[in-house]
Amino acid sequence: MAVKMISRSQITKTENIALGVVQDKPATDFPGSITQELKEIRKLGDFKGKAGELIVLYPKGQKTKRIFVCGLGKAKAIQMDVVRKAVFLIMKKAVKLKLKELVFDADSFIHKHTESRAVIQTIVLMGGLAAYTYTENKSGKHQKTQAKATKLILAGSARSDLKGICEQGAVIAEAVNYARILADRPANQLYPQSLANEAKRLSRLSAKLSVKVMQKPELIRKGFGALLAVGVGSQRSPVLIELNYRGSTAGKAPIALVGKGITFDSGGISLKPSNKMDEMRYDMSGAATVLGIFKAATQLRLPVNLIGVIPAAENMPSGSAARPGDIVKSLSGKKIEILNTDAEGRLILADGITYVKKHKPTSIIDFATLTGAVIVALGHAASGLISNNQKLADEIIQAGNVSGEKVWQLPLWDEYRDLVKSENADVANIGNKPGAGTIVGGAFLEKFVENTPWVHLDIAGTAWGEAGLIFNKGATGVGVRLILEWLKKIK
Ligand code: BES
Ligand code: MN
Ligand code: ZN
Image 1: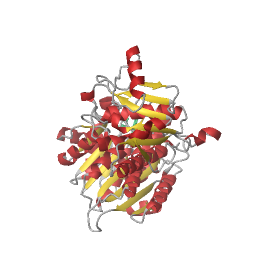
Image 2 (image 1 turned 120 degrees about the vertical axis):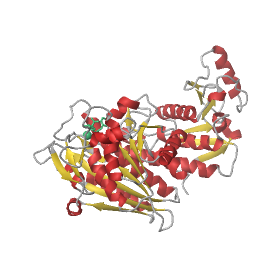
Image 3 (image 1 turned 60 degrees about the vertical axis):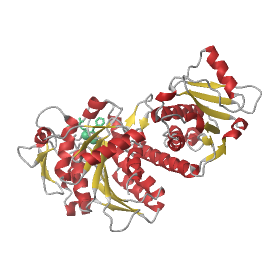
Image 4 (image 1 turned 90 degrees about the vertical axis):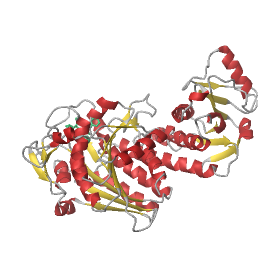
């Protein structure tokens, strides 16, 4: 996706314009008659410029048909989150009106605390995210809305580095939307093998990206006992997907990304209640995030080496399913007591993490819709972070603040490590006392991570959502923007 750019003086010659307007300053420096239009609307008192306030003006007798005006709040308080939301709201509206093109006046979104390069990239990025709707299974004209989405044009003062910044924004948006489409896809259409096929398709992007898939017989031979136990109740066999991206020198140790790929989580024999069970098609959101990151890293040619591992399985109840109380031998050799078959994410991740450690990564980041408890703790505003390495944790937290994909750290103290002790095996997959569900998940994973610097991201509250949050209803692709922001800083 190439982003079209025009100079700011051209703006009055375009049909649809988008502006950011602050609350506490008169609008004086807009091209053409826009300043006058804004003055009048303010005088009426219908528009104050509060953050998130959106109106559309319809000027008469000129080339411009619509002016989208979004409030940004008080000038001194404008942070990137305000710009993100404004761009998202405007673009959403433009898409709804089926506009062909929309010109963003970049300068009007640049203020004291919003750096120009970041703003420009954010406009392209959030504009791209706002244009997404999941239409794969809509027939006829609805299906084509995606392709016809409003084209974003950027008006700004000419800068030589603008083009690159815009293109990066477009690549990131595409990668997030790619993660979203995989997560939104229903579980009868996206299952372990079809997820693997998606990954293989992705490897065509570049010779620097390769994908290997391990099938069930190999998983059995190599001893992936935990992954196999989760998939054993399903007609769809589990697979292990491995991605390699070589953007740096051959000998350099990679960064490992591990994603939970439960294509449907019924709970297994510890069956979930039927209310909202359909949402468990999103239980492979961590896997989708990993694929999205690999897509963008490849297209941006990031100078890093990455290894990605996606253990994928469907968690189903059946006569062949694992039972509560079963004890299985994981790839690490550690024996796991499965006291609840619904705590399956940590089982497949245990084997995924053990496997990725064979590649001696410098650090491991895992993404998983692991616990409902993280929603109790943080709601839908932040992902939960658990780590064994404060330096790495701080870097990811910082990337969260910059990217807008917030993360919040939960502690991993010895008191919590005691909770995964098992009476009958080396480790149990649920806590032996009530409470701290998200941390118990982290403490379990740490047993397999051991000493490698590691961050666990529990994205159960952020991977999909209701309309009204910054995204539409459905998948968010959370983690893609976060980790790309972090990778950008890695040498
Ligand atoms: N995939 C779920 C977690 C989940 C629940 C994500 C609700 C999003 C919304 C996970 O596999 C699960 O079932 N976790 C259990 C763990 C428990 C049995 C220890 C949970 O959170 O209830
Ligand atoms: Mn579960
Ligand atoms: Zn699950």
